[in-house]
Length: 364
Figure (tube, rainbow, N blue to C red):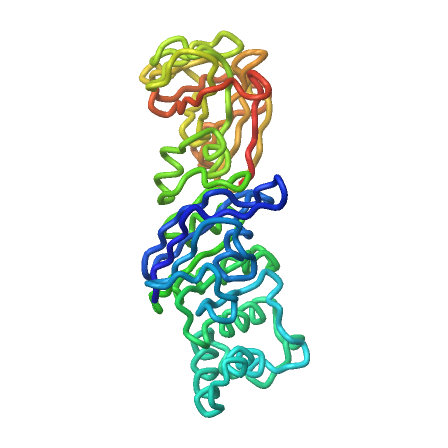
């Protein structure tokens, strides 16, 4: 295994930066996930690590070696593509052996390594089949075996689960994570799916517009987001715009006074609320720092959970998520309720946002 270091890695096309000053330190055996929306620079960063894109500036180090200017075939990295990129006319075993042949590994050694790699992904019995005879999940595992067969220093995964259906995606991501842990394999994965990122990573890197916004564990990013973008992209948040009057008092665009606890200076600001931190009850929640009457505008049944959109004022709306229990409180559209949350639950960010007082539902 090898430590991976990126130092101020950038890629520029004319005046446009696809990636800008990306600095990361990935430990031996760590599973790091680059997370962000399309066009944020995560795939460009991964391909610079792999050697498929030459950086404009910065360095890539694998272990003790600076590999920034080495071609891809001279770097000991294994890459699993989003599309799997299997050769349709070659058998499973031949696909897995392809990289070894390019490295001129003697056939007896190559046959042994192919057999070991296929056993790792539980496909040892399917070596003679063609890709078209396999399911999507099996093809994905062939691509993984091909990336592992030459024992790479770093495994790179480019949206490896995006072509699988939801149920299979859940199963395969667990398999990949268990395999990575058993091999203690340094791994970097790119995804825009936050559920994949949260369930697979040791640490997350949230990117936007080519730059790193925040690096940390799942709890770090969820509980202490660095800015409004991270609060919206990792997990779900509803945002309420207004003015921070003191470090302990935020007033919404609709005039609702919200108790908070921040070190920001007074001025235009936005409060972010996690839906599961917003309590809902038929009567006042006087034990909480914040307690407001509101009207239920929308109810979304999610099985084990219920989403409620609750209007506090003509300009202020918050989202609450409550458990679906047989004996639980279950409001309907039009009901008057009380909503509340602690001051610590109100994350405050500078700037009132694009639409003051609007509710923003962020991607899951």
